[in-house]
View: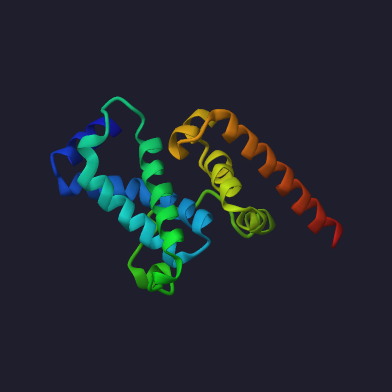
Length: 176
């Protein structure tokens, strides 16, 4: 289905682009939020990502999986916005920015609040692979491709991330 949809987007079919956006924007927004830890930056990253997808869809190779390509653009955009830092004018929330999350969330954030907080507290180079692996379901090879890293580097960062999360969560459980 994605191949047909992507071909329609390549042909500049605006309805197809809207369908593509509706299919992926919610998941992209949650991923961007996990990476940037800012509603405003996440909103900006998602919007810019889809603008880039629309204008660069001809660079996407048909037959390849779409999600790794989309998430490479999204991660790059998140990183660009994080580097710009203080030069950004912030928007207070998703609703004010006009970004709507079209899908219901499969993750129940209240139940996993401590886990998401612990993930958010990880340093960036460890947090991003953790988010892509465990929240988005990408394989290590796909994460390496998205982040332009060696697979062993990705595996190492995932291992370190799991260890830090384990320590953070067990520490918070002992404090109860």
